[in-house]
Image (cartoon, rainbow, N blue to C red):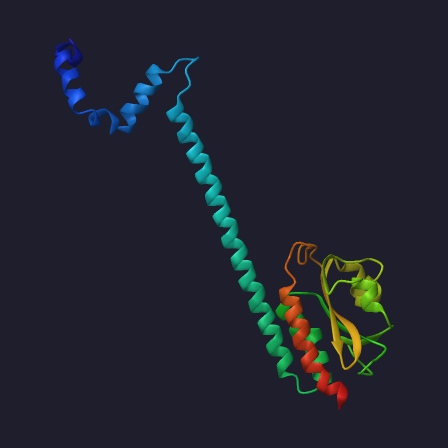
Length: 221
């Protein structure tokens, strides 16, 4: 004889009606009841709601993780830009700045090439990063835009990056104006994902403005 056979079912029903929480408060018991009641043609709305909530929770967690990753990436990019600007401010003269742009600044920004081009003016005879260029280069690269981020424009890769050109995959370009000379700041990377069209241009814009203010006094002297 089982324990169930010795129960007074009417007494049990009365007790459960008086205290339904004995069942509703037990998730495992409720799940067993739903499973017993549900047939092939019966839709368990409670289970469906639970699955939807679980799906929404997973989606919310994924969104949260993506936002956290984006925030960390933005903070890292800001830190890189700040380190680059500090290196720019430390340069004692234009030649020293040219050396820093080609070395320390490129390293701080995790890029493979940094170039500053001034239209119709070559301020240094022997330079690696601060170079002269033909008029209207900025318009040819940017059109009416102030900045552009994305894949390297193959038409200009060799002219901008020299021997490195064939290996550059992505670039960030910002228009500059220094001492009456138009020009561009160019950053290039071997990584095609380093600069993409959907990235914000705030940091390269900031870097371009810092270079304008640092270089202008030396061009006037």
